[in-house]
Length: 610
Image (cartoon, rainbow, N blue to C red; front, top):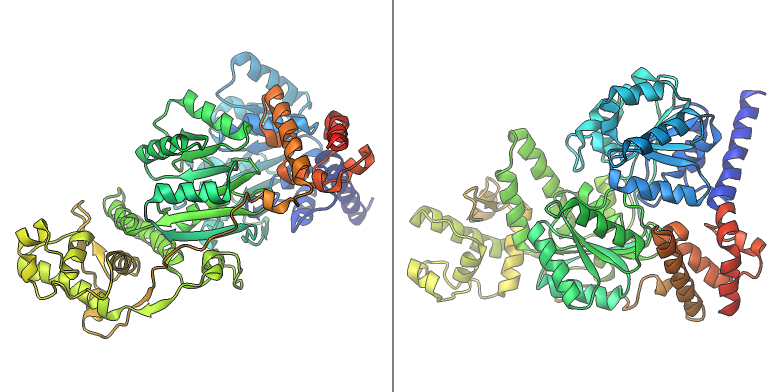
């Protein structure tokens, strides 16, 4: 057989497996090229957004090539669900990690050595063990897949030290193809992955980072818990979602608030007992409509496709972190929301954390650069999606589906207000050797004769009462934006007091104009209905809900996440087409051979009854 004939045969095999096992008719984007590269024995680096179908890029080659595909995954807690999902499709999968007892590990190792596994999941730390290397030496390995490859980046937001040793895969098993995959990588992180994993000779596939089904919205923080509640009740009633908070205390407070208001919410942070974290994560994955309130310790590798919203109550530290966290919404391609409440205190807190962080000056500078990019996204007058994609080196046009497109903000010349505010800061420092936070300075500008202003004698300052043209919230917006633009700084005294920066001088002497974003009176509002319900016509909605109820029962009975039975997108397809035979059911995306055999008759009965 010629090389061309072999490639054609492999492509036929890959398409056949895609349809028979996974229930899809065709590959998306660059999937076919990536799969061909790995089936042919070549290395690949894949940068593809969450929900783009990265896992198929190594699962299908592992099923086509002789031997077992070995997947390096950083999350022990999710390996069971990944294996369950593959097993439901008829794929022979298993994992090896520290949660297993000796007998279970021996059983998996025996199956691996006997060639009875299609895929084996390993945590990266297991590769430090000599026994793991010896085990891999004795087996027939189809490929190595390195999932969440951005974890190798020491400057990234999800750095895992154990990932630094993964170059050993190429050194010890040079003939085994490797595929490294991530949904989050700037050009700098991209190059670091190539260097640290020795992938210089690999084929590199960079897909668009655009997630058009996600609506990005950032609004001023004003009673954030009430804002969050309005988002869930108004737009996502009964939907699964993730709410990110910066601190453990905030996670607990937010979860309690939601439960008190009738929203089924669970907390997740590193301070909880591991059994509680595991139980809460399991409920989130297995039940419909749970809201997980978490620190950033939660989420990487979460495969739940029907997360309809991701909300941030605190400012993320970087655009990469924000993109990855918001990317956990809408993996099934259905409409979803990425919502962030952002205020002055967020900026002050993040600046203070950077100043007090461990590490050298270069490290703090890198953290500042990450924050500056995040602040630029928050304060932009342009399309959020354009700004977000530009961060990853991708050009685009206005999306028409983010808050700045739906409700365009107004820019204004804030030079004079900025001069008034900076003059107050400089007069306090030079005339009185004093530093104060934003609220006190705003009180001076507004001419408030409260106890603190009068006690300090600040009602006699020349800037007292000169800021009456703006309201308090508008002045807070001015302070926030000056901080975001580096025209105002936060003192490293730990109290959040404001100080001038080198760039302040140009504003004060009039050589630098200051453009500001006018504070919107209200945030742009989306349609007040569930995002999934919005994609199901009214006549199909009752059947869709019956299918979801059936799926929930099956998931409980099998003790697996509901999405392992079927995703919302597949149930939506069934509700819309109303198949009357197994052949018709098999044509619906997501219904593979194994699931048709397991659930086909039951689904047809539900459709007939509906």
